[in-house]
Image (cartoon, rainbow, N blue to C red):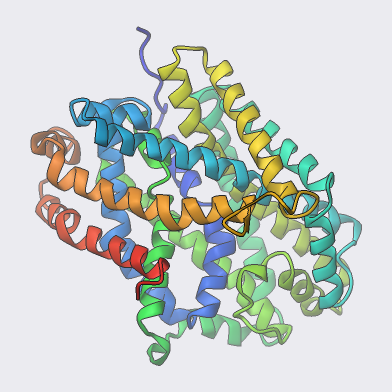
Length: 452
């Protein structure tokens, strides 16, 4: 058996895994969640959730992945001694990644359309025009499919080049570019007239707006943003070397991920307040509200407004691409190792399979609107099943697996890098994984199911 591939440098580990976490959850979901839940107060609670829950859960996925040096399904099988239940939990991570890959590429393709539309000036008009533009595009039977295929082609190209030559190399290029674009747009947004109110909304907390829903929203966002439960972190960890310090890496990756999320807020809210548009626009913020925000905020400099809009959607596409690469890799690694086929063929199976499902998801929003399950279009159904059920259930079971099923010495060795790292936080970590994290995830799940 040939030696398993791994990342070639510590920088590659951090940028690739941070790229896995940084995606639409940061640049799209985080700002609208913060807008709907009080801004800075939500962010404070979110930071607490990342520290106390997100980082320990990330470390757990790292431990399982690096211990087995295998795909997610095989990693759980290896650590459980072949137990069928825990093997099925690992397989659920692969299935979750496969389904998310399918519809995530559809949303990613929308970003490409908006890059084009911003460049040629198609988004000029009032809010009702922009809303109609988005609805017409989303229900078009051809354009969304075209952009979805383009996104899959780019992802496939990177994945087939392997861990070092594809994933790591792309991450070293895409992540710095993402940060440059982000900082440029933040600078342009914060210099607008009236932007100070948006900055204040992001940085000065008003805890009178905090209730149970805000806390659960912040908790759920921390898991969504860090890509916990999708199989990505476990798969990437299987490419970590013995020298990679898991806790330190998790902290660094979480810092990058959180920084991108906060900068995304500083990019959007100052411009929104400058344009006099409410900050709690919800999921429509990116594709319906923001084009109007950019137009109104840069009304005296329309050319600059077009450039900022184009850069924003380019940034969104880059963030989506780094995440889609990791999601694709979850399934690619599985087929490569379980079917014993070349990596290129495994990637092709994933690209074609997810591409077909993705096209069906896209068409379910328009031409095939009859393609529904439980009253939801296929697109919304997959989003609901993966986000509301598979992710919290997978995260919950991973906590139980690490705390109560996996060999304690193996967990200790992985956490401390075989005794080369201090045991300082190990007991705290175990306490969090035994009780705090599973109870918190259970609370998210029950809240999403409408129990409370």
